[in-house]
Image (cartoon, rainbow, N blue to C red):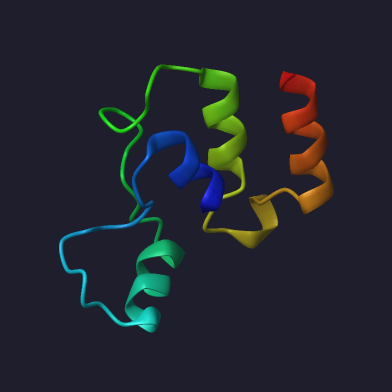
Length: 77
């Protein structure tokens, strides 16, 4: 989530209601209700965005480990 915010300059989840409780925000994340890249990114960098998106998979079985994400980001350098 932090990497998404750093890359796009915006928070990952809906900003429709800034008074949402933490459980409501977590529910949005769990359901994959995140902002699309289009219009939020500073410029396209597909490989970087795919790496970020892989870590945001709602299905834990499809989400890479922290170590795998680390290696994926290092390979982009």
